[in-house]
Every structure is written in C-alpha cells, then in structure tokens.
Length: 316
Image 1 (cartoon, rainbow, N blue to C red):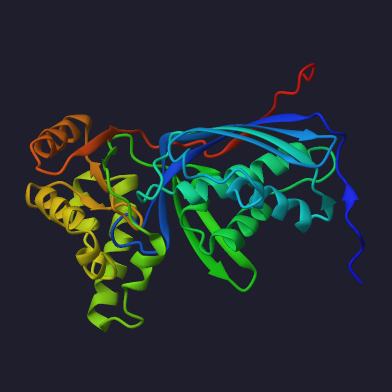
Image 2: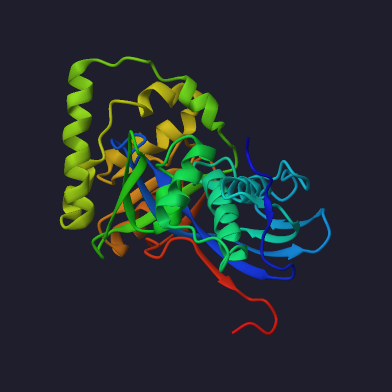
C-alpha cells in the first residue's frame, strides 16, 4: 500500500526560475542532440497555505496557456511532488514567456523543466533532487530527452536512453559558432511532424546519419568550418517537408548559399549554425528578401541551462 503524501516545507516560499529555449536534432542528430539557446521563459512560483491555483501568464502563447491544473508547469510541479511523496500545496505562478510556442524551439520542454526546477526550489531542505532525478522526471513527462537535457544543463547535449533511464553528456561549443533562428508566423504540431516519419529507413540513410552526427560533434566543438557537411540529414527532414513547404524551401535556399541550415526541432523554425558573426549577418540579409516573413533571432549558446533561486522575502 502506498503511504499517504506528507506535507512539504512551510508555505510562503517563492522561487524564481529561468529556462532557455532549445533546438533539437541539429540536422542529423535525431532525438539525440540538442542545443540550449539564449531565449528564456521566466517565472516566479510561490507555495500557498491554502489549496488552489493563481496563474498569471504574459508573453509568447499567453492567450493559449491554460490557467488551471492542466497548465504544463503545474503538471510538472505536481509530478515532482508526487514522485517524492509530498502533498502539492496551493500555488501562485507568475510566468513571462519569451520562447515562441509551436515553433520548434522547445517551449513544452522548457515548461516541463521550469515546473520541475520550481518543485526543486520549493522543496529545498526537505527533498534533494539531483540532475539525474530532474532529467528522469522531465523525460517521463516529455517523452524524449533531446530538448529537456539542454534546457536543464545548457550547452550542447547528447542524450540517450538506457535500462537505467535517460543519460546525457554536456559539451562545450566552439566560440565561433553563431546560432541564428528564423521564426515564422505559422506553427507546427510536434506530434504531426513525428507521425510523418517512416518506422524503417534504408540502411545507407542510417549509415549516412551516423557519419554526419559524429562529424557534427567535431564541427560544433572544434571545427565550425565543417558545419555545412556535418548538418546533412536523411532521417527526418525530407519526410516532414510537405507539412512545412516554406521551411523546407528556406533550408534549401540557405544551404545552397553555403549556410548550415536545418529544421529546428520539429519545425517550422529554421536554425542556422553559422561559423562566425559575419556569416550570420549575411544569412539574415538573404532571408530579409524572402516572400515569407521570418523573424531573425541572433542568439548565443546558453551554457548555464535552467536555474532556480529562492527569492522569498527575508531569505538570504
């Protein structure tokens, strides 16, 4: 018989959480590679003495985010409390979203990570959650670790599954790598994008992606001049092309000019891994003349990952 949950720390604690956007796959590294980017969702979460939810959301996707227990941040907090046998308190959440929703920049993974980090902060001193705990819980909620790993730990991450659960390795990115994301007005459903892929692929395509994934690690860490070749892919982008023709066209246009452009996550945003700030500006100039409006985000690699800190009045 499962023991009843116990109460967590005294109500009134407030924590501040900050989580970066992410771009998964990076071309050939399907469901494995992810990169943290310098666009952030921020929130303050307070535990309340009385049950209930108070949710305030501004910024990206604010009109579509639920204000009840189905809110993804609330679900993640509740999931962590339940996992550690603690009773969920009332919650006040003030959230400011800057990560675009439905654009392939890890907004759902960021919400999951934000909720888990909030739970970690609220339970500090009562329950200690390790990085491995957070990655396991995040993967259970999100379904795969490629977005949540860089959101948690920052930088470039390799994520994989074992019998013991999800694992990750964080790597440093060469300082010459200059990310640029082109964000369209339209959105793309991750579940729809994933449904368009076959369950089997030709052996030569699998071998092709293994070679490019290995090369991509080298290109991102020490040889950015190899990024164009290293971001070639045969496992997922072509299969999804019909669902987002403007994205597919932009990727091919940029690559024809020598830029390492890929679909960001499930799309429809396009990630360019330029080998220097000057090259990034040149890519932005090409897209500025496109018939499809794209918002160009000149970003940096986030090396810190998600953070949480206690901001309770009177705390030190």
